[in-house]
Image (cartoon, rainbow, N blue to C red; front, side, top):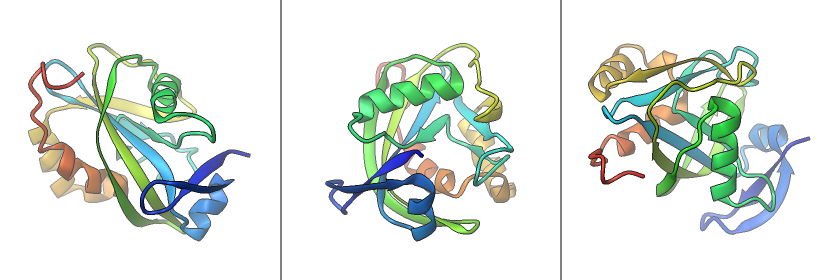
Length: 174
């Protein structure tokens, strides 16, 4: 059983618990979200696999997950990006925040660390995790979120507002 790291509002570890149980109870836990941009400043989106235990088939950011107990955020982000999308690239944490969202019969209550990176090419997706992927311009994304919000994960809608304020010049991101 996969465990997540329970934290307080300052991201200090206060315990560990099985992942699904944590989401059922809505306990605050550590997570991360990754946004990968290409050199044309298009964002890599993933469509979650239909077999995911929540939000199956919805579009979301490039990768997101939880660090394992005793695993640094740096190692966890690199591990999951490789496992889900087949991508290796430098990542940089840009901010963190707490959000809470009801997702079906579960509660996402996360202290989320947001990372960005640069990658040009095609991901090699893990079909157990990801159903599809696409590069999308920020303008196209804004339009689609406005017209089809139900097609996106709840956390993506929350985080993307902050990520869109980034200065996406090539030298500013990893």
